[in-house]
Image 1 (spheres, helix red, strand yellow):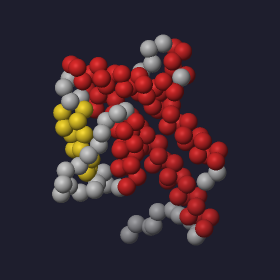
Image 2 (spheres, rainbow, N blue to C red):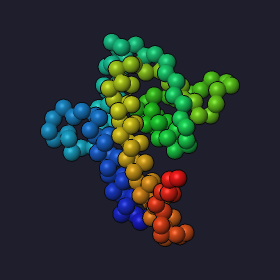
Image 3 (cartoon, one colour):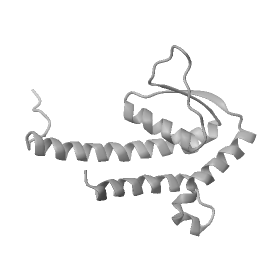
Length: 140
């Protein structure tokens, strides 16, 4: 993976975050560095009117687990799990409005972007390293 490809991916992920920060002025639209602070501020406001409730997420693979945990921690939400729960389980307490309006849509867009990138890289590496025909098997 070249550095320029990775930098493009990072910029795309940052632009997704900035989109969900809902900037209040046109100048803030370009200020991706302030996105996290705006989301954290909105989360605190929502918690005053929409009390946090406990949510349980189960991630099927390690990389989506890491993506969700990183996103939660970035916004000051502490992920945890109870004794006896699987390592794939993530528990949090957050406002329902924040989860439905911000966290899940942002997570899904980030996840979709990463899936697309992983598929592209996998296709390229497998075709170069193993065999150029990586098309689907014939159906019988």
